[in-house]
Length: 170
Image (cartoon, rainbow, N blue to C red):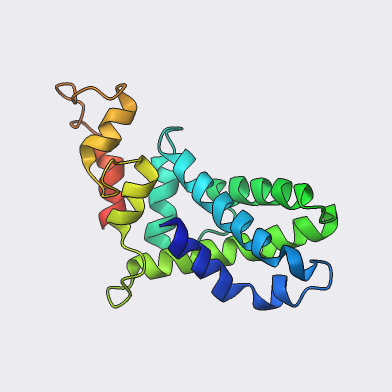
């Protein structure tokens, strides 16, 4: 997934990164990797932190603007850009423009049945760390009970993890 995400960033940052005089040309690839890594890490952090609702909302609505995921990814991206020597104002501006656009494009691609570059099950598999890279509900349940088998009743009841995950497949 990270390769596809990097390609998505690369396709969409020509004006904001590559043609930006504040970003030295030799740092363009590092900026692209920083953006894709920041987005991936922010998405991945949502499930174990319990923000499955926020993750479902982004993928169901296709609107990442102002979400916790966007804010987390933008903050991480800004920090990574600072580490590359890019000034703070430019870093914040890039984060504010690049991150929401890429997250929106990602969610559009996962929802498009004619686009096989991102599949929601494969994305979730990458985010949950499934051994085979595929989404398996037991991978997610394992994250909440230390890797053990699902406890009886773990997938029942209103508001449980299974109800939240179902929102990703509507």
